[in-house]
Image 1 (tube, rainbow, N blue to C red):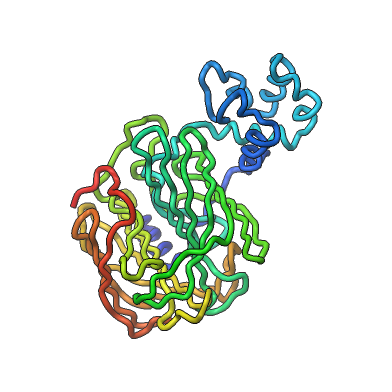
Image 2: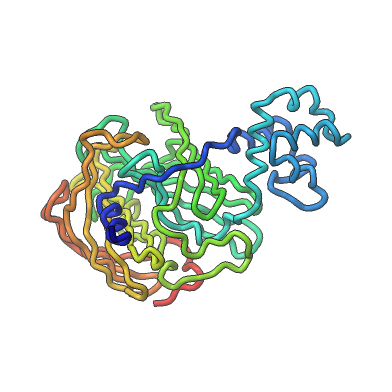
Length: 382
């Protein structure tokens, strides 16, 4: 079988690659961060759990349950935990898992931008853009999440969310606020405003794997954790350097929108290593301003990519019948519903010309002028 042909088929159907994950860690690092910072206040002496300077040698040894327990038992300043943390195996495991995340790779780099998915589910995933800090201060992450309602259905059961938050230098876990935009019209005003509907955390243990945990406050009670892996190959993420590589094609990856219809837009990954372009398009049904969440629509647009290409013809797909954070039910399907061309005029300007021949937007066509959200990533040229 031709590997590139197989990848093309997989992406085109938005049925994500089935891969095997290693056994999950014994502890929960997200809970471990809360225990470290709030419950036991370990940060009062050790700062962030990922600090590994000589003054924080106990933290380095605490990356395993045995090491953490030995530190409590043998270090005078830590013996106060002998009858609390040392006696709680769950807390020990969670704090050790948090410390084990370490400070490498540095999450404050554009290289984490791209398409991520959970191996156990199909036809849904997240797009990420990292806006790195220019100094050792605060950068930010922006997540766009295409998924479904909690019950299977047609296009009116598609759902999408965004999540955003600040990066704190040296901290591996990023807290995020989940937002939802509704009451918009397809490729037309009004501008929609996001409303918070929950919280999330995101961390990466390598340049190709991580975890996204969510908790909704919208009355649904939804909570869960999604293990993440890259959909395509890593391009510029690095684990051991502060001077990160750049790539002019990959630097076009990120979030794009039209100012007149803010509240809908595109997240793009241009991947010259996998020779593929993947676009997630967040929109609404035509005349959907009164439809609420049922008026949301999302599409994917995909195509092979040749290095240096700046005008890329793509196929548009619509996926229906899925269930929120659930393996593919029997009725889920992904169909080609149109064609488009994504053309980059510069690092900050592009156009998306579309023509729908099927699906819930059948018969619609037009051209959307796009501008980049946020600053231009390093290495971008057109």
